[in-house]
Image (tube, rainbow, N blue to C red):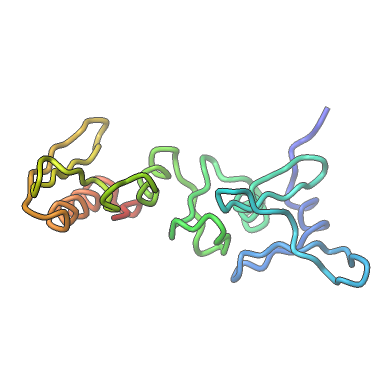
Length: 162
């Protein structure tokens, strides 16, 4: 039966630099020194194996700094999954984390909340309070995106990302 990793065990095995977000092993490895712990997955998240289980580095940062894992998800405020600096991490619900997501790579316009309505017209929409909200149709993608940004600040607060 495995037990949940605790802060004391984590601190015995790894060092965490809260300013850079980098974890290093406290064990001198061959002639390479104290190596950076873990590996980065294709999405840019660092995973570290401790006591036979793999953890996202962001969650380990919470454990290191507070003595417990985040209550919910761990959100990277700047949207960069490789930036595990303490000031960039925050406890967030799944919904809050999704609100802070970057624009999807398959988004043809490269602008969150904006789709082409018809040639030369762009629709802005946002999902707030569980409902799709129509923000208007605009003459430019940039105008539609501005409407999305204003609405995102209103509905998402600190988790708004344009």
